[in-house]
Image (cartoon, rainbow, N blue to C red):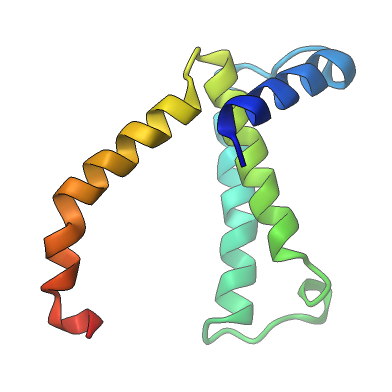
Length: 108
């Protein structure tokens, strides 16, 4: 996925179908709600909680896509080039964490 193109796609969708972006605080609340839905699926499907019948039809991929969509909205409305930010983050994580993870006995 090219984040720059995906940000443009989301912006186009908002302008055509969404009228306008929700404000940043509303989108932050929406993001929290969507992450909660992901957490519920993970906790019940992969964790120790039993999964309710009503949760068995939930699509984890769809819920993760909801999270990505709201993150892209927040990036767009706050002027963040998410592709650039992601590229910088990967460089930083690679430099900072390479030896740390290779030397972590818990991961062997």
